[in-house]
Amino acid sequence: MANTVIIGAQWGDEGKGKIVDMLSARSQVIVRFQGGNNAGHTIRVGNEETILHLVPSGILHPGALCLVGNGVVLDPEVFLHETDELAARGVDVSPGRLAVSKKAHLILPYHKSLDKAREAKRAGHKIGTTGRGIGPCYEDKAARVGLRAGDLADPDLVRAKVRHALLEKNVLLRELYKFEPLDPDAVSDALLALAPRLLPYVQDTDARLHAAMDAGADVLFEGAQGIHLDIDHGTYPFVTSSNTVAGNAAAGSAVAPSALERVVGVIKAYTTRVGSGPFPTELLDDAGSYLRTNGHEFGATTGRPRRCGWFDAVVARESVRLNGITDLALTKLDVLQNLPVLRICVAYELDGKTLDYLPQEEGALGRVTPVYEEVPGFEEDISGCRDFAELPDTVRAYVERLEELAGARISFVSVGPGREQTIER
Ligand code: GDP
Ligand code: IMO
Ligand code: MG
Image (tube, rainbow, N blue to C red):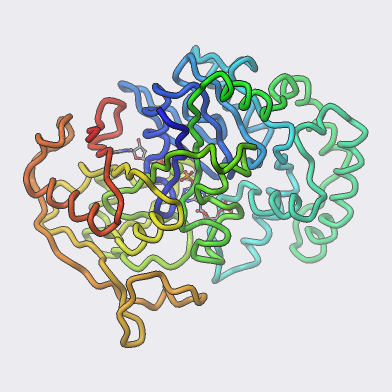
C-alpha cells in the first residue's frame, strides 16, 4: 500500500479510528501528526470497543510501529493512562513499538485551567472546546515558551520553563479569570514524577520513521478532528488550534510532502458537529434526533451529544479540494435506514445568491440556507452487506450521487462499527 494520509472530511468523528485500524493491517507504521486528546477514535473488534485519544489507531495490530509525531500536543498523564489501559488488556505498548517525538509539546495543568477559564469567560459565544488544554498549549508552542517531551530529560530546564510560564499565566488566572493560580514547584514535581515512565517513549521518531521508510515500510498518517475544524481553513473561530489538513501530515511527522502518496478522506453519510459554530444542514427536528439515537452520536471524548444533520456536498467538495483526497471512505451508511427520504445539500443560498462554495467571511456560513436535493430512503438492513453489489439499488444510487457531488471516488463504504463491516470497492 502507498503512504496514506487519513483525515476527517467534515467536523470530526467521521470514523477515522475504524478506517485507520482497517488500513493498519496493510501498513507497518502509523503516525499521529496533529491534535491531542481532544480526539477520540473508536475501534470495534468483535464486542470489544477501544477509544484512543493519543495512541495511534494502529496499536491493535501487533506488528505495527506507532508514533506520536512532533505536531501532536501530548498530555503526559493521559498518555500514560491510555498505555496502562491497553497493557491491562494485553496490548503491547512497549517503547519498542510505541514512541513519542522529542519535539512534541506537552500539555500542562495551566493549559487546561486556561482553556476552561477562557470558555467560562466567553459566556454566550463559547467555542465549546473539549477543555483539554489544546488551544493554550499550541499558543505556547507558537509563542516559543512551550515544554517539549524531550525536555523531560533535563529537570532544571523543566523547572525553569514552568516557572517562566506561570509568571504570566498565574496573573491571568488569578486577576482576570478568578481561577486558582498554580504553584510552579508542584507542577514541576508532578511532571518530573512521571518522567521515568515517559522518557523511554520519548525518542527521535524522525529517525525511526525514516529508517522504516528506507526499509520499504508503508506509512499511515492518522489525522484527528476534521478539515472544517482546521485553524486556517475551518469555520474560524469555531475551530481547533492545529492544521488538520492532509498537508500538515508532512510537517507534523517530519517527512517531505512528496512522501504523501494517497489521501483518504473519511466522511459520514450525514453530518455531525460537536461544540459551537455554523452548521448549515443541522437538523433540530425528529430526523436529527433519529440520527443521534440511531448513530449513537455522543462524543467519544467528552460524551456530549453531537449535533446532527444532512450530508453537505459543499463541505465534501471543499475537503476534496483542500486535501487532494484520492479516495473517500463513506461511514455510517447503515444509520440512515428507515428514513423515508434523504436530503443532500448541493449548494447554499446567501443574500439572494446561490453559492457552490463555503463563504469565507466570518459569520457568513451561519446565515446560508441549504439548497437540497431529495432522494428516496431505504428500509433494508444493510449492516451485513460485504459487497457493493449486495446493497439495495436506492442505497447504491445514494452513494453514487454523493461520489459525483463530492468529486472523489468512494472506495470504502462502512455499514457498521465492526472491523468486518466495510465494503471495499
Ligand atoms: P473518529 O473520531 O473519526 O475516529 O470517530 P469516533 O470514534 O469519534 O466516532 C465514530 C463512531 O461511529 C464510533 O462510535 C464508531 O464505532 C462508529 N462507527 C464507525 N463507522 C461506523 C459505521 O459504519 N456504522 C455505525 N453504525 N457506526 C460506525
Ligand atoms: P476527533 O479526532 C469532533 C471540536 C470541539 C470544539 C473545537 C475546539 O475525535 O474527530 P479543542 O478542544 O480542540 O480546542 O476544541 O473542536 N473538536 C472535535 N470535534 N471530533 C474531534 O476529534 C474534535 N476535537 C476537537 O468540540 O468545537
Ligand atoms: Mg472522535
